[in-house]
Image 1: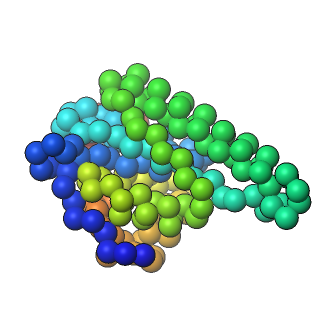
Image 2: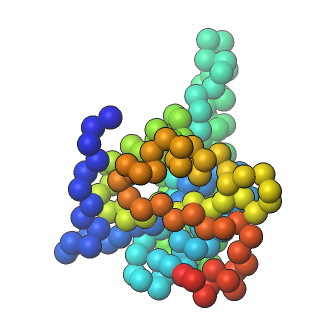
Length: 166
């Protein structure tokens, strides 16, 4: 992968973006809530990323294409729900991005391509089952060399607690 583009989010003609990875994990809502409330307060934008993996049955005629279309539609619907939530809770219009491929790779690729991404906002799981797979993966492999700051929102924080912080 090439070197990340320099961040330009605070230059004239640009606007900082807070990037949230949207998946089916319960803690995704905490990351979205923090990002939307913080974005509204500081005049930033929110970008939502959903990824889906290529179908496992691509060698069967037509089945792989149908599986891909269903996964993409499901990802788009999830993004639409979260974008509506960002609009309802903070008056923020969220940009939705759907990518096919490995979540970590597509996340890094999007950050490399979009020079306005200022923060990656993730949330740790609320239970005792660890921080969550994406938080764990980023911490283990690349957090020290990541091109933007990573904000990890504790999954147990309430809306009121996040409001006080964001």
